[in-house]
Amino acid sequence: MRSTSKALLLGLAAILAARLFAMAVMPLADTSEPRYAEIARLMAVTGDWVTPWFEPGVPFWGKPPLAFWAPALSIKLLGLSEFSLRLPAFAAMLGVLALVHAFAARRFGVSAARWAALVFATMLLPLASAGAVLTDPYLALGVTLSMTSFLLARRDGPPWWRYGFFVGLAIGLLSKGPLALVLVAAAVLPWSLLPAGRAQWRALPWIGGTILMLALALPWYVMAEIRTPGFLQYFIVGEHFLRFVDPGWQGDLYGTAHKRPYGGIWLDWLLATMPWGLAGLWLFLRPGQDAPLRTRLASLARDPLRAYLLLWGLAAPAFFTLSGNILWTYVLPSLPPLALALGAWMADHAPTQGWRARLPAALMLLTPLAALTLGALSLAQPERYKTEKQLVAQAFARMQPGEQLVFVGSRPFSARFYSQGAAGQLPMDAVAAAPALPGAGARLFLAVEKNRLPALRDTLAGWRLLPLYASRRYVLLQVESGAVAARDDAAREAPAATAATGLAANPPSPAP
Image (cartoon, rainbow, N blue to C red):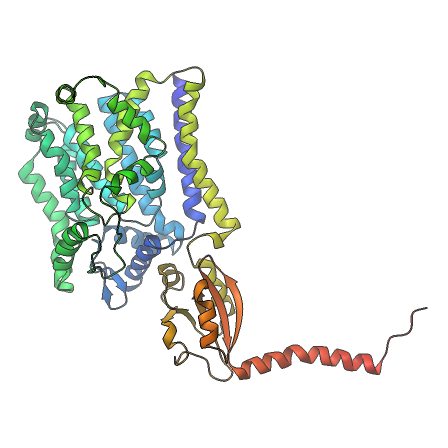
C-alpha cells in the first residue's frame, strides 16, 4: 500500500512538472490568452487596480478583475513573461486540486483522495487550464471552495469550512461575476430539499457569511461603476443575460460572439473530461441500469452524497444548454465531482493485476504527454502556433529608431501583447494613402494575412516589398521607398563592381 501511495504521488508530481514545462515555453496563442495578458500588463504598467483596460482609453467591462489582479501582481514580482502570467492560474488550479483531495479524503478515504486528484489532474480541460491566462481557473476555484465547504461544514466544526462557502462565492464574483452564484445555487438549492441538505443548510452562518462575501466583493463593483459609469449595465445585462440568450449578440465590445448550436456544451463536456468522461458516464448509469427511471431517481435520492456530486456536475452544462454563445472552458467548475466519483470507485474497485490494472495509468499519461509534446513543438516549430510572438520579434530585431510595425486589416491580440501595444493597425483600403508609409530614406514593416498578400502587392505596386518571415497566419514584409531600394541595390552592386574591376586589372595566371 505504501509503495502504491508513493507511486501515485510521484505520478502527480510528474504531471504537474509536465504542465509547468509547457506553460513556460509555449507562446500565448490567440485569442483569449494574449487578450487577458495584455489587460494584466496594462494594469501592472499603469498601476490602476480598479479598472482593467482593454487598451489605453478603453475600459474592459467584460470580466471582474481577479483574473487580472493575479497575473499583474505576478508581473510585478517576477517580471513580464509567459511563465509569470500563467503562474497564478496554475496556483488556482492547484487550489482546486487540493480541495478535491480534501473533500475525497474526508468523505471517501485517503486512497480515494489520491485517485481523485490524479483523475482531475489528467483531465484535458483542467490540465489545459492550469497555467493558462484565463478567467475560468479562478471561477473553478471559487465554485469548488463553495461546494466542498457546504458539504464539509459543521456547526461545531472549524470556521474555515463554514465561512469557506462564502469566501468561494466572493472569489467567483470577483472572477466571473453573478454566474458563480447561479452555478452554486443550481446544485445547493435542489439538494437542500433532501433531509441531509437541510441539515447542512443549518450548519452555515448565513448572516455573517453573507456580510463577509459582500465585504470582499461589493467594494470593487461600486468603485468600478464610479470610475467608468456604464459598467454595471454592460456587465450585468449584457454579459450575464444577452450573451447567453442571443447566440449572435452584437453588443460585445471586445470581440465576437461564440455562436454554437444549442446543446453544444455537452459535446464540450465530453472533450473537456477526456479521457475520463465516458468512464464517468458508465459509472453513473451502471447501477440499476435495468430499473425504471423513477426507481433509479428514488435510489439517487436515498444516496445524498451521490446526488450532491451529480447536481454539482450537471450545474454548468445544464445552465449553458440553452445558450449558443459558449466556450468549452465553461464546464470547468463542474468537473471536480466527476473526479471525486471516479476516485471513490477506483479506490474500491480498481484491479491490481493484468491489463486492467495498467489501464488507468495509461489513461493518465495521455494529457501530460500531450502537454510535453506541445511544449517541445513550440520550441522546434513556433510558426505552427496561432501567435505572432516570433513575427513581432523578427520585426523588432530589424527595426531602427523611428520605424514601425503595422498590421494590415486585423491586428491579433498576440501582436498587441508581444509588441507591448506598439504595433499599429491599418485597413487594407487605407494602406496606400497612409501617413505611416515611409518617405525617402525610410522603411516600414507590414504584417498581412497570407490570403491578402496579393491584394497588398497590387495596392503597393510602386513599392519594394521584401518578405522577411511567415507565421501561421501572417507574412512580415519590409516596405521600402524607391530611394531606399535604389540605395540598397547600389550597396549590393558596389562590391561586385569592385571585384570585377580588380579582376580586369589583375587577371589570374593561367593554370599550369
